[in-house]
Length: 623
Image: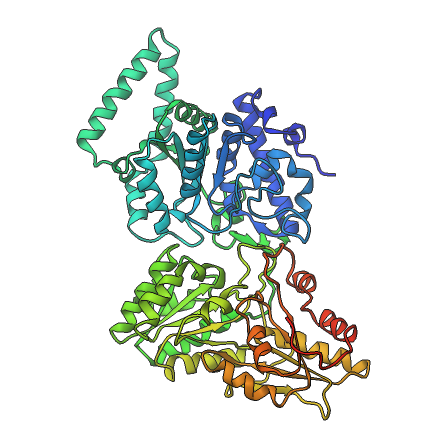
């Protein structure tokens, strides 16, 4: 087993409090070495965790995370926290089925105060915990660590506005690395740039402070100088946004100067009021490849740490196909605009951003704004294409209803990462989109099964639809089924002379259904497969007509929750027996996509086993 120096002797945060700053700096180096080695084997979020090493160590040293509530916004930068709170020996299971979550998870440890996974909510949750502390007359500290990327989300400002005037003792740490996943955009980024000071100034300030501390009366002199500086700052410099909201603003401080961070945390703990500490860090710190390419190393698959190059899959995926196709259309149609929320790379829009810069809009982590802005674009005659992950589109439900659907505006939603995502787990699986999208009147949902169908459906969505339309597609590449059957609402993709069971599905799940039918054929069971291509207000009628052509037993296979799914609609339309195989009405564990399919019973083998173990026909619909 590889040794990691002083880290090998750290069993809990209590072990940090007796260490010198020199020893803590050595610990930080060991933590970075461990992170690179571990994440290179399991995959995960690397650059963000390398950037917060000193901050995380300082927080565990100055606070008691078993009692105090420390919330990492998003939570993908909580690896150091997990390592220091007794979970280091399980890091080989990170993001693996049955292993450690890549985000904060209270069921893993009492030191994880809440589930995390989406951005911009930490201050809201922290304020709620602070209010609960006051109401119950308890004594503990509450800390929210939020990045400058997450600060582009409107929810953060709602919370800051409320927290600053609440009077509740609360510490908000702004982890400012000038990145979200991609480079930050917008007015907040410029505001923080004005607040930043040079590293030379910070170093000089630290040296002066240390020298004054060595002379008699130096402490009093330092405090006097600080008071004068604060008065001059208030007169000569604009008040920070945070101070206007009611926070006492501390910083900015070099987030990799462990001693300075610890001192400011200790100072903030003594203040019985809302405090915002501005900490400047470098995303990817300590590992040269991630320092040079922090976006590429934000979330990585297993890679060769020594070579410093993430392992490339070499396989085309739906996101890339979407981006290429949209560029082809935009080349000929100046009406087409693209919008994303801090995810140009993840959604396949990097090339579009370069080639059509005036028609590309990265709004930051602000999905509600993205969809409402798309409504404005559509109302004025452009064709906005909004590329968002399914799990993040959840945030914009009201805007879809209020700003887009009621006015029947032509907004095209490209819903990436629909269905099972895998290693990121419950907070990132796109298993709710069918349910909430089909509840919106007038919104049509296209379900491509492969790249050819994605291209065809994008063409139809842009050029033949006149209202809101969504195209849902999964993470990763296409499967064995590569025919373009997109012209009809529903198609018969596997026929049998006398089918004993009909399989109904849509999207990428057609591959599992077809593979299950092949397995059943090996056992003498004839199974046909139907594929639904679009879901809208006519789906009920479409399924009613199709049910008359199906076998007496229908099994509906979906990669979404049961409630609001196509299966429930089919149960009402089919006169025979209907069984529903889906993710269930639950939140799923993390793991690989095949493992989660198997866990849900929607992989080919599980579908075939279910049918072989249930030979009775015609017992009436059930679900």
